[in-house]
Image 1 (cartoon, rainbow, N blue to C red):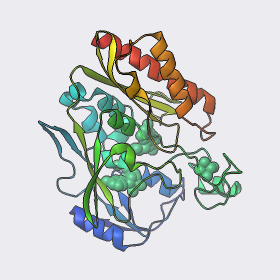
Image 2 (image 1 turned 30 degrees about the vertical axis):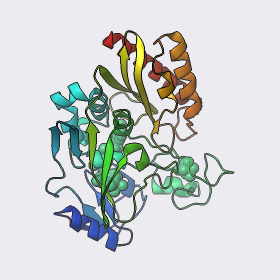
Image 3 (image 1 turned 180 degrees about the vertical axis):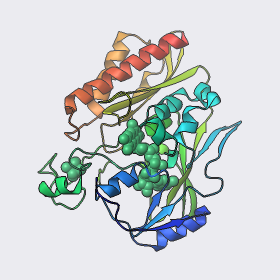
Length: 327
Ligand SMILES: Cc1cc2nc3c(=O)[nH]c(=O)nc-3n(C[C@H](O)[C@H](O)[C@H](O)COP(=O)(O)OP(=O)(O)OC[C@H]3O[C@@H](n4cnc5c(N)ncnc54)[C@H](O)[C@@H]3O)c2cc1C
Ligand code: SF4
């Protein structure tokens, strides 16, 4: 890794101040825990003139449970999320996902907002400056060709944040604060299927927090990921499932996926399975649906087809395990 480029660090004391600086300074970037941004800057992946530090913004680290659900501020750290006993009961998939991210040192400073906005990844992108220069760079940064799909015009770098699929299956909404005020959107709408511009955030907009509703009665959720190194690694494929069931039949089923596409996905078509028996036929259909809807590309050293199959098998296993736990 190389030295950090020069930048001006501005410590915001309010959301309004951060938004004003970000909207008014071309190329300025937000920084929260810095565990994704700083390694990328050291690899020469951008040189923002100004970094706006969000860590001192009062109230952005609030985690509040109420009658309607839980509001998780953008600056809540992953360590805090992973160790919250009440959340582990209410939103196990979210807590399991938080606990699986990076290593304890990272989680002690890494934030929910930073995790949701983590950059997309590719084996041709997450490399040092000299490595990328010797390969003529690529479409995502500094070059004009994608080495993964050379005849295409888009970047297929994969979104590999762990929290998003867990929050998707729990029906979370994201609060976005920006120059024009605050808006709320379903978490899946925060993302676009474009490895170069995967966040649907306008200039100066920030994630302020996430609101997760109370979960349906008898619903259980879980998260699982496949990774190269069990102690510390991004998901090659990550799957979250929330299942509620009654007498061995699906009441509702939601499946979220990460690591396979440029955006985290909610598996389409599961609503039609309400009322179906949770049996081998359902699991077979689930496996086929996952394989069809994910589109891993050659963005990791691990084969794309293996990631596709692992995503399907992980979804099947999670549904089976959750069904047994509910019974
Ligand atoms: C060795 C290593 C292993 C890792 N393993 C994993 C892993 O297994 N799973 C995983 O998901 N991640 C992993 N990461 C990436 C990173 O540690 C986490 O995603 C972390 O949660 C990022 O949070 P942060 O607060 O440090 O973000 P930062 O690095 O501060 O920011 C990340 C991005 O989000 C933007 N941002 C930050 N806060 C906001 C906000 N409130 N609104 C809008 N934009 C914002 C920043 O501008 C930046 O573009 C790993 C990183 C390393 C170095
Ligand atoms: S998918 Fe292509 S354009 Fe995107 S980072 Fe990888 S090589 Fe670069």
